[in-house]
Image (tube, rainbow, N blue to C red):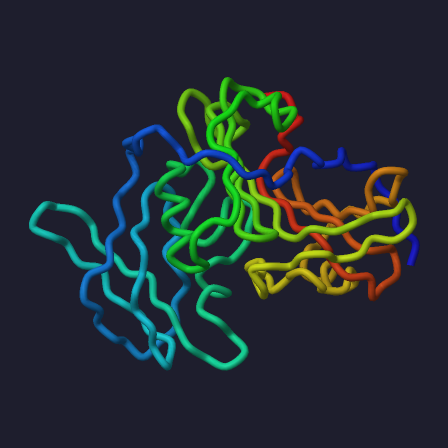
Length: 264
């Protein structure tokens, strides 16, 4: 299969660093606060609510998929739940943290940083790396006045105050999942934790590129250059890297959100 396309700008700016804790208070957003009340079990399957902003952690573990009905508190807040399941071969985080071109699960791009971090941590534990808020040019080519990268193994979330999705306040605007090494010829997966995260269409690290093509019509695949392995582009907000151009070449990194080096 011959694959050609425009060369994608390398997203080398998404690197994990360690740093200080966020010293700024949680900011108020206009989105609804999602809480977790007592659950009502309904025998059907639903997807995780996809709302930006603040999401409190879930503590419910079930042995079957459940649907939990929204409720309204006395304070007028709309209350919904994020169900979790315990099914062999299908961890709860796989359904709760679906990767897409608008975020990760219920943590959508534009979401408040502290709320997004709390949401992710409720499923996959405490972050393993945090740069704290720094000048963007210390760690990237991003625009804005401050930037923060928080990581859970090979899953890295980028926050800033200027991006293509929002300007003027701190917000979540991109993620990368998967780390690889590339010697100019071959790309090798070096970290795939937390394991098993998938896109809404079922694509994850290790998925053969021919399967990626089958679920994303119009996919563009670009050859390797001296610095990065072959890459695929679904749209401006969703792309990734693969180990090679053979049909069975696996995905080694998935990227969501605007390229940090893109002008705003």
